[in-house]
Length: 310
Image 1: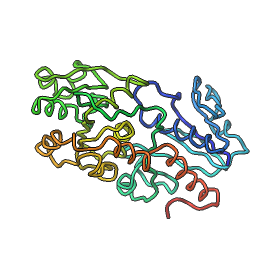
Image 2: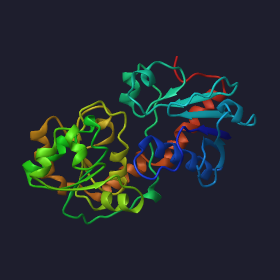
Image 3: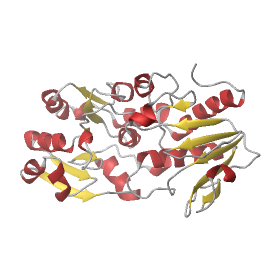
């Protein structure tokens, strides 16, 4: 099969960017499985085993799509213009525009699709090669998200750190960024270390060494790539039961909490979770290889002329 991925981002992303990583991993995994993969993306993009066609000023994206391809997978907010090729749109967003009905959209979880009135979904997949596994954990908890995104709940993580006396590493922002979240006071009174945005081996080491990932969201999370990254690293997750979390975090790999009182109890119980079980769940359900295969089955339906939704 000749698959074309269209990305508005330069890949691979170096620091923050869950949707960007998913697009990169998906293209890479499909190439590993013997498919011909073309990636149309901004200048500077690279991906092993994949032919890259660079988006340049003055050229429409549709004009860059090879006529030999079988299917086009669109990522992000890309507008490709008219094409006679079967298309699929990957949606990892909660915005009203991206959640609007489309017969050929693929969502990031069952809950994500349901909220859009749809059924087609594929769990995001992480590449195990990009992460480290560590069975013996160090004495810190990890918050991994942009702290300026209020829906990610860094202020809640800071309150929990203060309440439970935790050493907390916050990856994704600084104390100055906290002025927008209302969590500055708690950060000053807690054992908190801010490391800014991280990537590569630094990020892998932080994920693998953490006693748990604190993921105190206050929105309907479409998927939560940081959760899959933690699990593939053998790290349990403590989160709220919102959005996709009941699908991703089973009782053997973490805790679904209804409120901060339950989260405090869960924090004291993370040592009961097996790091090996966390990694096994991620390999079996949230790997880039599995994600690639499930998308390929959807491609087949589109190539046969069938929409993904009625």
